[in-house]
Image 1 (cartoon, one colour):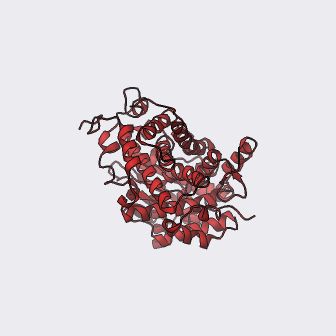
Image 2 (image 1 turned 120 degrees about the horizontal axis):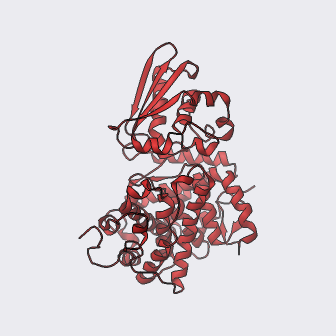
Length: 455
């Protein structure tokens, strides 16, 4: 098999379409099903926490006059929207705090684009929890396989990979729920390819959230269009003028279609312990470890040096922090709050903390340096105090990574904290219970009806 051809010689969309049509829930390993539950639970929490974010509130204000039949819940909100707009808003809410899951090899945040469309569809029809988990696992697999096939060049060129590749997962999962056949599903994936968009330059702005929201909405739309007879080019993903090539890459077909049903990308999904860019996890871990081990007080700091690889510096070396969005992808802010407060949670990345003069002053003492020997996701933090003492800490496997994963209990605690932060009044204990046992539900609406705010 060459890099640009499937083993069967069929187009990638046709190969994926056949797999999506014939896959059986019984063939999905229990480890994958459990990871799906972890991903869904984490997403519900991030939606609850993000529902008061300005990006979500503004989006709801814009969409209300245009929304159709109120069919689907907006998680953490008292209102309902049509299924396309509900998928859009829920994807934005789940990503707003930078606290959603991360597929470690590609840094795709897969649940935000993949889950909202099928949750919305579940409110139109009776869908079992087992079917939801199956469709979700398939959608995440497709999104991350597309991401694998164009990484790392795709992201490096400035394409926001969650939005550009997430739409394929949304289309795949929606096609499965709509019971599309292999040909229709292939067309849905091709239609999605024409709508794949999102740029890294917009990460510190609300435009980033809209890119992810559109990947959810438009992936669902692609599947609905395919169900009504819309078609796409057979090689819309890997063709000479297809998605991958237009983005500047040659699709690696072994990553895209190899070992379907055997290699599940959900097993490489991770969960954030901090609401910021995933590359900052090691920076925060190292800073907190250093603060605790050496009892470093923020007032004693003369300067801080953070050493990491090129990706860390390219994405997060941001000394000029103007707002909370900047802060969430800033080495300087992350170090400052970890040293000053001994924490890096949603409060520490909020606008009131970002604008504090003492936090800004401490940010000004932090510089970043390239370490060409540093491994991905690792970082070293070096603090020099006013008394001339120099202490350092290195994080190689940050909390939340594949080698140092968050436990089920950790995710539960995170979700409870986010539900309290969002203040929705939802029965979070019952929601957590239903997510862990969702595969026993005959109708997913038993869960979705609990996700609306009671206020």
